[in-house]
Image 1 (cartoon, one colour):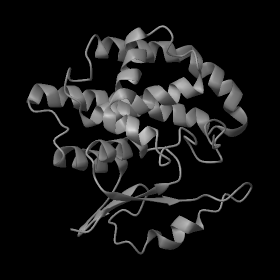
Image 2 (image 1 turned 90 degrees about the vertical axis):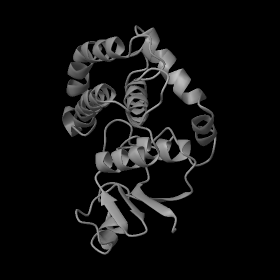
Image 3 (image 1 turned 60 degrees about the vertical axis):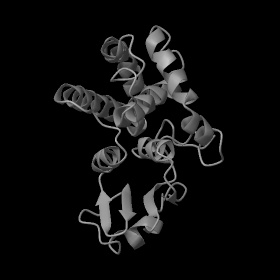
Image 4 (image 1 turned 180 degrees about the horizontal axis):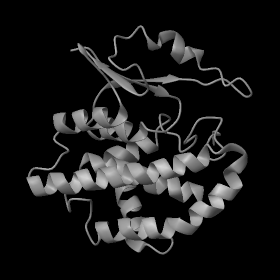
Length: 222
């Protein structure tokens, strides 16, 4: 079988949870990263020149190509790989819990993305966002409770998303998680997973950039 290709921008964005999953499952894959040019043009032609040549039903980033399978949309990719590598719920109750957590995390992430890309309104929007952030984090903290992972001892694909959303906020405001010991412990547990620790210590992982170079937060490399 041909090697899986994962295509995305050279940043974390929507795709790092997919990278975590692939490394956790010990999948040999090509991490194809497209670059965005510097300001003010922010040239994306490296992607747009190739975009409509790949045979994707909905040409977009991220995408995966695995033999005859060509799939875009980050959530569809994450769910497909989760099913393939058995990182999903086993019962209806577990599946419902994962579905709920997944959608909540996507909503929280979307809120942060809107702030990051708000241009001249960034500082004002950042201040307003930080006022409402504790409520969002409190709900996540209560939902996780004293569980090791979202489903307890079993790691699932939504844990890759939860880690990413929490880490984004830790980068956004260093003190944002200080009041939530279980969320801080969760981050440490996730980072200590052998496959994840190996990936994060490799030259393949970079904590920044989180977003594209046009973002007011997280758009620059370390």
